[in-house]
Structures are given as C-alpha cells and as structure tokens.
Amino acid sequence: MDVGEEAKQRILLVDDDAALRELVTDYLGASGFQVDGVGDGAALRVRMAERGADLVVLDLMLPGEDGLSLLRWLRAEGGPPVIIVSARGEEVDRVVGLELGADDYLAKPFGPRELLARVRAVLRRGAAESAAKESSMAAEVATFGPFRLDLATHVLVCDGREIGLTSGEFTLLRIFLEHPNQVLTRDHLITLVKGYERAPFDRSVDVRVTRLRRKIEPNPEAPIYLRTIWGEGYLFSPRGEGAA
Image (spheres, one colour):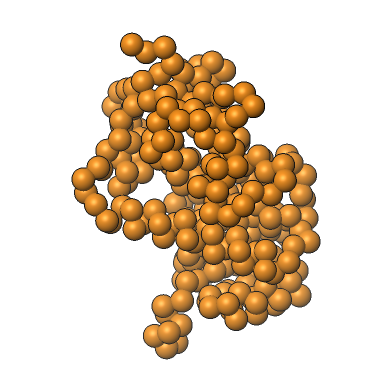
C-alpha cells in the first residue's frame, strides 16, 4: 500500500448484498476513500481487529448477528462513527438505531451521492470535534448545575459520578452549552449536529434530546435544563428553570 492509500480515510461497509457492496465500494473509492466491504458481523469483527475504520456503514438485516447487535458492540468498544443503512425504514428502526448511538440513518433504496453526502458530513463533524479538542486548552471544562463536562475527554461528571455520553449526545450538549438561554429550532440543531439540511420528518434531534434528558434531568418528564419551547424548539438553561 502506498502513502497515498494510507492517508485516505477508511470506510467499512457491512452489507450482505454483494452487488450493493460493489457499487458503493466503487463509488466511495472513486470519491477519495479507502473502502472495505464485508457481508456479515463475523467479518466486521475480524476487519475491525485487523485494520479498524474511520467510519462504518452498517446494514441492519444481516445473516447471523443483526446490525443492531453489532452497533451495540461497536459502541461498547468505543468504535468509530456509524451510519445505518437499511430497507427497514420505519420510524421505530430509525429511533432504535439512534437510541443505540448511530450517528445517522439512511433508508434503502438510496442513491450513492446521498450516502456520500452523509459520510462526508459525519466525518467532517468528527474532524471538527477533534480539531476543537486540540485547538485550545483555555476552556477544557464546561459546567452547569452540578454537572462538569470535560470538552477534551467528553466525560460528563455529576457529584463525582461519571455519566456516559455517546458522540451524538456529547455534540448536542456542547452545542447547547455554546448557546445558553437561546431558543434553537430543530432545523438549526440538525444543521449544527449533522452538517447538512434536514430531511422531512427527521426526528433525530428529538431522539437525542430525549436521551440527553434521561442523563441530566432530575425528572426527564419535567426538564429544568433542556426545555421544550412549544412551536419553536429547545432552550438550554444552565442554571435550571426558575433558579435564582
């Protein structure tokens, strides 16, 4: 492998459709990525151990171990960003995938250009987060209420207890901390989180807000930090609603 190949970002495509694997591999390869294609979970695990990946494109319906189980494993192992692609395009599948920590979801059938846009957006977001961590040591910790968020390590702590955050949850919380006491619309949040325009009925931000509330709110049903402003969007109150 030459130096140019080593410098390319590596994408691992997991799909049991051989024709689709070939199409996507060729298209993303021609777009400047190094792409490996495998057909099942066992091959995914082997390839991750051997070479790793900068991003995984993961089908849900696979022979043997299904995509959601593999997503759980990737997240438990601290794996790379994951884009789910699946013919199971129902809302419940999208929500479950996002709940488990997927970075994006694309329903089949899809065009290669649409997948390429999603891949670039997810990788761009990850690169921006890495650059932000390295660019300055001036504001390593953000605080709100009893919480401390380490911006370099992505660790959230409350009263000495560490609270696990997915990459999507960290990104969303950081955005809210950067825009305190401001109403942010769903469309604006999706642009900030994903890096591209929202699709109709995109509920990914709502799912992440619900997940985040479970981790930071004393009562997620009556939030004091991450409030819904009906008809407008969300407002983050660092001191809690009604705090003096």
